[in-house]
Length: 253
Image (cartoon, rainbow, N blue to C red):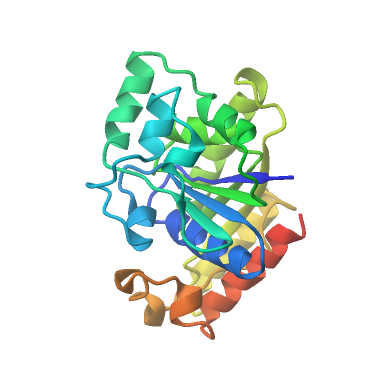
């Protein structure tokens, strides 16, 4: 059975795209069939996977805007286990059109569930903020992972996503959507303040925080600029090990 996981947070810069990219590759390396979907108009995931979001002919925008568009026409296999639905800069316009023209927010959900392609995991990268693109991702998803940077604003993003999950459960046709977990990211092991924030998060949402903490490591900052995942660029780094541990938690259910 396919598990559809949206990676979302109201805040930007918390590691959403990095999480989709690295979890996707770790799961694929473990022999799982993985589809990554880029729903962010910035299209960072698409660029990291080697495509130009200004030149993509068919993208997640096509899926959202054209009811007749099939998954097979936008899907780009990367290897035997990993595929990408790229994003494009047109997604910014999609967010406006979906509101103005009242596009159905469950179209992505329908496409994914009716596709003849089978995947073990679908990971959806969402834009910063809880706009209509994020809502479409959450309506389509079974689970939500919320990356949070361990700083003073961490809980604001978590609470916003929790509120949105409740709204989608009760009024948008996806009552089974659940919070898979909050994933602490960019954790500074030398910061006493960061440790306090992490303790507070675990206290306030007990049982819904990953055991794994993704550390901050300046040595792997160059990975995306080289078009590589952290797990490929520096497989023995603390960040790569952490993403492998996070993937193990996801696989455990």
